[in-house]
Length: 208
Image (cartoon, rainbow, N blue to C red; front, side):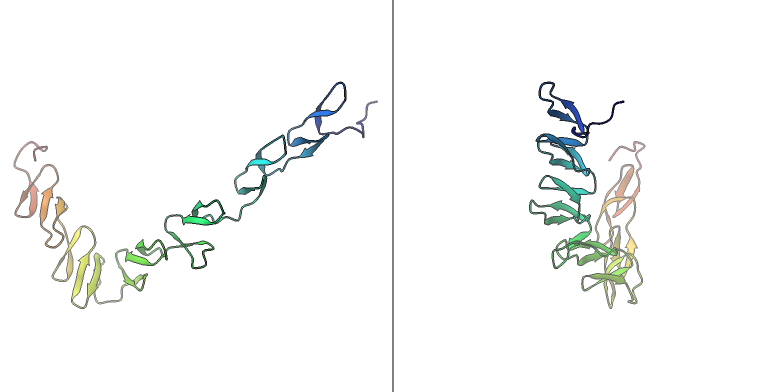
């Protein structure tokens, strides 16, 4: 009857015929001197000459040839060599203590990338001290970007101010004067007439 030898390394795959020394280990082990030692199971790839990890499975970080749990901020887009976040992901900004990336207010249409303060709001919201909040003014025009006591003074793209309110610019205008709403150029198939775009008289829709 054959039984495993207590003298031999069970993780050794190949031995030298003359000296009986282990020369090759099974997968998941590396040859550490004369014995086979286990590789870190978190390593995706390893250096079989020294047993160190060369890459890790997702969710783990390579540090000094070893893989461990990653404590990196998932909202950081770019890390420096020292492990400090250099750049946060889109719509995130670094907090005052420089410890993690914080989300920008979802009501911000645009924001300061340094401190996360809102610089513009989505329609229906008003900018107040770097924050966007539902407008409570008498102006209920959702297409108004900025207003004062006299009404709207600035509209969102596609609209222009007319007597304190936002009026839609003709959708046939390719470009327009945002102060007056008059078309300055038209899409193909339409002709410019007194600041407005009308169906072209030419049968050729590609004629400008």
